[in-house]
Image (cartoon, rainbow, N blue to C red):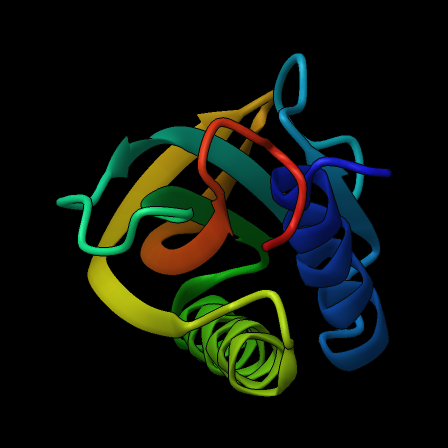
Length: 142
């Protein structure tokens, strides 16, 4: 059976491809985006919750999605805000509708101006947290 973390990340990736219209969507990318608008999914690990059931473990998985747009001035900022809104909607809808996810929470949002190549870009990094259960000692779904 496929590990629950992989199933969750695959579901997030599918939701972003379906709902955002981004030209590039990549998990754990090796570098800067090649196409714009771009979304990069970054796995930030997980922490165990306190053990409350003998046969079930719960984990808080954290990840961020980095979004990149290009353009100029107000138009670029508007594109960034639109991409961010579509991203949050897609991820939260996935979490709310997935039988693998007990809870999904939106975390901090950071905005940055970047020079990638010879062009000015805007970027965001949006944190998310997902709580999921597994059988104790097993990486598969509970």
